[in-house]
Length: 397
Image (cartoon, rainbow, N blue to C red):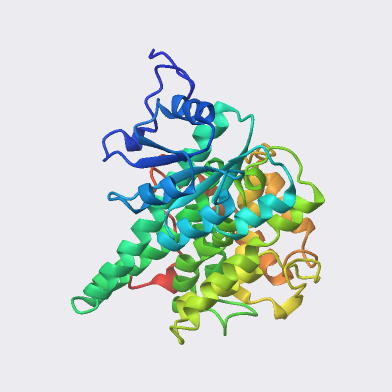
């Protein structure tokens, strides 16, 4: 058996996916040489080019050089231009550039200011080496995903003149990349997006006949299948220290976490307003805003109740609950299928639309089947294998 290495051991060679790629650049900014040396030493095990700057002026010069750095680790309190001012200028220079603040200050106001100005995250001195490496890897992964998404958008404009089928495929890839950007912040969720899409589609199929038959058809199911992965896109705006916290959240942290539906909905709204009439993105926006609303009005962010909650968001709420109950998360272990069914049924008419709970009862065995039929768990490919579809809705396809 191969010897295991921690991230700080000499045998650690960095994340597997990055070993054969072009070396990315990281800039360390601190007026104390000892801190710069310490950070460089901890990052030496990773396959990146490490550059140092004594102050904001040197950092800006390095950030403007080609190839542009992907990440800047910056102190906050420095002579001359402060780390917060440097952060503002770096984001103006390159919005994709990820900035992690390294500071001895622990005031919540300072942290909020940095996050508002675009910092990816922050590390408090004295920092844990493994925490440092994890944060650096996640920040670089975020930069890569953003760049990929921009490339998809550029390609989309070119491909509009070619084939309609290729345009649709590229659109799906771009939007899935956007959804994966949120999911990449929490590696413990596994194939959450894939399961969410499959659960949502299966529950929608069950509603083709019944009280909502007039609202659900083939187009609704297809849009739901592709837009449901956007439900948690707003989590890109939540700090890792809260998103990945293993223990219970404080009241203040819970308030911050509950901002993610608003962040996600506002993000998609800005796109919808530019491309009016796009049913697919409109549904994604409604889901992002409303998947944490409750049937009885006790949810967030707006306290909507009953039919005020868009139907797509009500469907995704059930799918999300089932996946959350049956999945391992940083703060809990997984429950079995029967326990998930019991909890969802117990919330009929409170958290969930009664009609949807009745539909879930009729098809819950398929939910358990979907969990077992998803394959390729180590891959980021959005693929469902052998998921049964109801014949009446998809006949002829």
